[in-house]
Image (cartoon, rainbow, N blue to C red):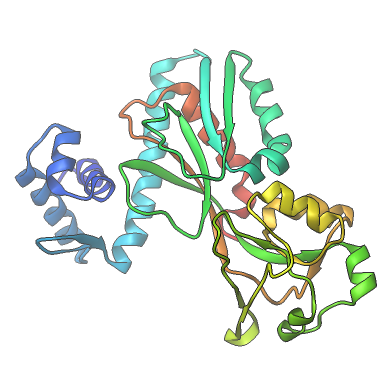
Length: 300
């Protein structure tokens, strides 16, 4: 069994969602894809994919193995690209899409350093909370923040994982008091975020498996995270943010972590980019730079 070939076959099958599409990507046949997956499962003595005539999905063991396989293949491809490129520096124009909150709060922490390290790279940046068509929009890379991502033909690399936390400005808490338990939130002004006309409650998780569903945004609701951030800094109420977004505010004392034993679920940062056998050095450089920057949060 060619172990690397079976790993590449597994990755292609999962990313494309079918044996036929995977075979087209790798320039082989449907039967070859099926045979390689079967060989891998027999080698591991574990089922990696549940499949029927209409859909397929990774088993629990398959998800863990797939994650490790993708990491291994990414590192191998990076080594191959470095060997081929020699001393050539990444260059050219990068077109990337980021959420507004990343543009307003996080770019200063990584973008200047990236551009300083790669002076031959230039950047076109689009800040938008709407999901963009990465391929159709001509983007080299998109950053997305979500609990998970739907299946697509894009490569999705997880950069970080962090909780959504409750925060408020010291001035607000001095005036209205500090909530001591989740039900106390109902007596406070809760600033809501909703990119659509409909509002959604906060589904909070607490100690020992406790949960709470809290209605937010009855008085103030916004559809842009920079506006929500400005409102909470101004002392208008309590709100929910990914911990990465407000880490500097917490360190500087501009915001206070409210109910620290409660959180609003995990959010993942993903780098999305079109699949390419030989990824452009400028794109790979940015992905690896972001992975290093967010490394501290990857297993949080």
